Image (tube, rainbow, N blue to C red; front, top):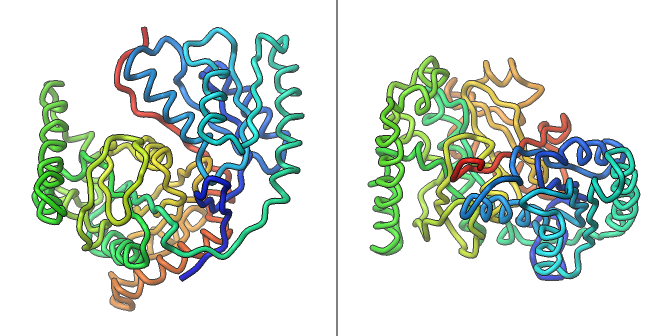
Length: 387
């Protein structure tokens, strides 16, 4: 159970070798995109953050940006700033370099360069050099124990808890048995199933974290004074046959397989444990994936019953449909079909083993459909308002 990946000088393992164009602020998005579109071998991020954020909100944005820059799937980074923002490109670049001294990092400030055209040219020049350097990196054979898997279910339907999610649970168990790590997330989609996860906790402290996290999540919803339905479950979930958040949650947790829960951690917190970890993320798909990748996951398996096409800028995202009908309908976007379980042509165990083998192939360089189509979705959870 090996794959071909990149061992970084700090010992971490990447499964991609990206040069990342990273804007520190929303105002630099267009220049970052322009740089990446000029230079093959790069990827870029776009986001709405980086200015007039305060306190914990600004700290979270900085942390997530830096964590994408230091991620082992990234060879080098061009950080792009406007020049007058709260979260400065210079600071993001310095933080990346401090954590990863071996990693090439270049900063482009649009105002200092004399505008967007000159800044794009300067960034493209730096990115071109990095891509040439990155092309000399050599893959080596690595054990599956080096992998951190992010699990996601989006656009769930009545079959999610019957086919795709249990199959992903089998793949999750196989990875943990091989010594790897699996992230369960989507806290709002665990409401009503927290007692099941708490019963799997390795100790009472972790069990208490499960219950405390759900109480915190429910309090946030209650304090808004609105009905949670329509947000969780979404209108599409309801149309797909899910009647309540509890029903959705009971299907959601199947992704986590059957292994003991080692810990409960905050959004985008670095993953240090082996085994199963619950990360507190929103149910919103892109915010969740961004948080898991910031935590260190190198790849994501994303199950869907209604259909989805999003992906991460730096972590390959494998899509698994709950039904063959959806797989055929959205074949451009979906990699694997768990619908054979519904038709009785395959078992949960067999599809789970297929997902696991696909994970190893993707870790070795096989492109997912979201990568081929260029989906680079990125969104950071907000804590406070812009000031």
